[in-house]
Image 1: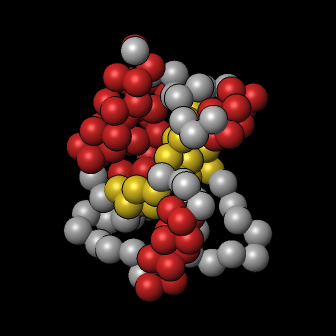
Image 2 (image 1 turned 60 degrees about the vertical axis):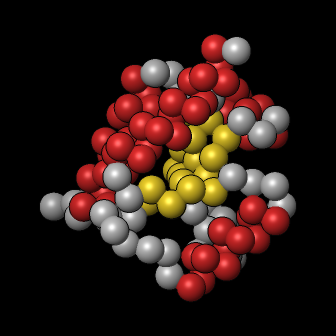
Length: 109
């Protein structure tokens, strides 16, 4: 049975899909601690890449409620942020909804 982190991640993926956002599983080769999900405004694979290149994406690190990233993850997140990426550690569906609302407002303007 999936743990609490997987449950949060699965519910967030369903929410993203319901509004047409991309919710992708990603892997960084030879890099430990990097987030393994990315949320994009556009819902198709080509749009997802275009969205990532235009800065309309956020890297997501899912954690069980109240959990924090480990030291290796903190370093990887800081490195991504230094390169201009947005990285969020998500430990609840409500927090994820807030991130989605920010993107929905941007989509409407």
